[in-house]
Length: 346
Ligand code: GLY
Image (cartoon, rainbow, N blue to C red; front, side, top):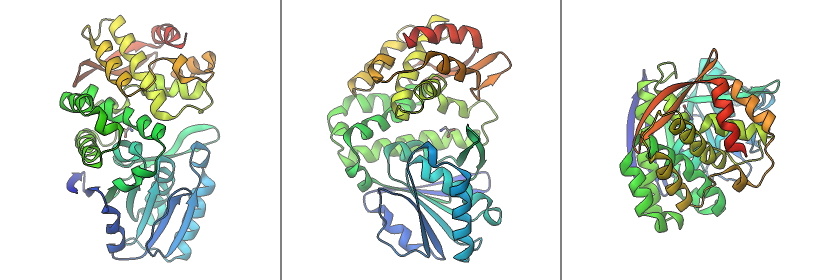
């Protein structure tokens, strides 16, 4: 079990990674309400409970308002806790509600997916969709405690587990060559979920992400964008498939496509694309739209690039790996990007 402490702005954040770490929830002093995904249980007492469906559709204002009503009737005060147990959707909805109720109450994230443990559960971003716009309403609000209970991973379907590893590979490619090498040399045991090895990659991903968040908590210094490597094209693919592609798979193809674009424009060293392809293929992650086995509407995908949050005027600021473990950002005119992304969509 690992316990790491971070300070982001004025907030102290404790992250605990390991088997049986979720017992810490029972030790929280104060009232606590549980917001959980349908497919997980928490064997502890709570003052109230609310179940949220998985998936983008549940990131809505109705769920947030319902949680706020529950907080109010449970008499939750500022020193009490909202405990979010589940994947990204649950943590988004619960985190948003916790951040606005009484200007903020205690928030504990217990991610139950690999994606949640290495990305969505930490960093303080939370948002819901509104009137058809993804993540239109949201806040930056850091959880005080994050518990990565590795036992939850044993129940994940294998495909979902592997898909989540795409975000770990993202850290390896852009920030941490040792992690890239670790993922490559421990492939067999990571694939079969050897929890000691999984703990190591969750820990390293946590260190990488929290370092970046510490340098650019509000995503306005051009540093946190590195966490978005693969996501410009990834989001376009998600939109073009009407959000039927799992996020990690879309990001996997996105990382390949964005690296190819960067190589084509001479922004990265030769050989980067091969390195990116190699590790993703080792884990059986998709490297082309074809391998996603879903219909991606080209028009919708290309249009989604226009809405990318890293667009400034007619250009998109893209984070890309110069070589494994090092990244840079470069500006691509939107039309150039669209022209090159078309090749990835073929
Ligand atoms: N998932 C990207 C970020 O936290 O900034």
